Image (cartoon, rainbow, N blue to C red; front, top):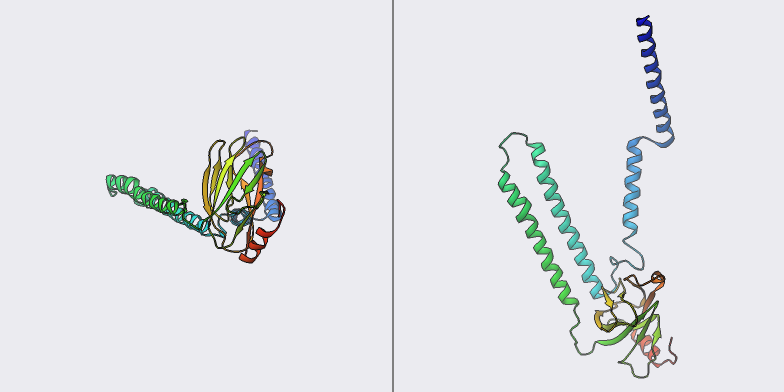
Length: 261
């Protein structure tokens, strides 16, 4: 009887394992092999990541000198982070490859790989960031157009003190192509942030304070901007556009009448 019971258990296990294998085969036929699923998932992930590298608010599609400097700094930072990542992962994998006790100079690896190597790379990145930041700082040079951006929930008003008689515009900032301009940013109520990604960096709009950012557009066109600081329930709708004109079109716009031309 014991022998019959064991035989019955063996047959039961075979049936269970057979059922699992058949179900796995059906899943593979329906949805593809795990390798294929992994490959498809990786391709979808790469496509999703790359989709964020373009568009009207992409910092990686610069259209001005300041934006180009920021995009270059981004690539430099990415390269530096890749170098650090490879170095750290390589140092972690070395003990797995070389298993002999005492074969690794532990002190040298800790000091060289854990302190000196990342410190040198990070210092180089810091110097690059400071150099770019210095280039982007407003210097009050003659010939630079001054415009004023005043933020409020949830809109932007742009004034042109260098253009006497030119009325303020709502939601549209008019600038000439190929000429640097400084935006003097302030706020009427809460903290906002002025940001036109394809033209340069962003700067906060703070009540009772004026912050200045220097930008330039290299080609005629319309460049989208956005408030980059959460400011209330309609924050996502607080956008604006920068209209970059050719010299002839900019002169025609100056001569036009009306606040929202």
